[in-house]
Length: 219
Ligand code: DX5
Ligand code: ZN
Image (cartoon, rainbow, N blue to C red):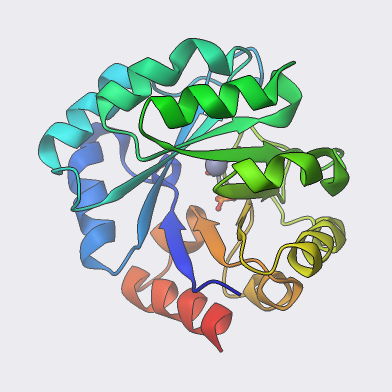
């Protein structure tokens, strides 16, 4: 299994001070920064767009931190170039939001980003099997996308197990409800990229919380 990458979700941070929240997470040992983009259509919530990501990138040089952009949007094709220009490192679209995932993956790679594909809790893992050879990551959602602070859905773990057994070298990300209380099952199932919002930002010691997530995956 590829090594652990811990990606705090800045959705749980202070949006009035996004760049300093990102820097704080980096200094606490974050491997990636997970940036949740919601358009009010694909999910019933709104967050930020490329102009805000551009501002964060202005404060954090490319290479200092990996921006993992989780695109909870209805038209993922529309924003690829904007997020590449904004300094995104990975563009993770939702399988449910596109009719031509192959073309979208090509578009993302041509823009110079890694391509990820996310599946909602009700979408089977088999939906992405044929795409994996072209993908850099699969994100198995462990909550219904749209909001932070929800309860981890244990019943999504068989999908992680299925993907891990078929694709031993694939980056498999889990997102939603990850914390010290749920990391064991996620790591046992085979997830190696761990998104945690409230689990890190509300921890007494975010540095310790990140280290525990990483150590559990790498053990
Ligand atoms: C939910 C988002 C998640 C969310 C995770 O739609 O994709 O990234 O911020 O937050 P927690 O870890 O609090 O469940
Ligand atoms: Zn997310």
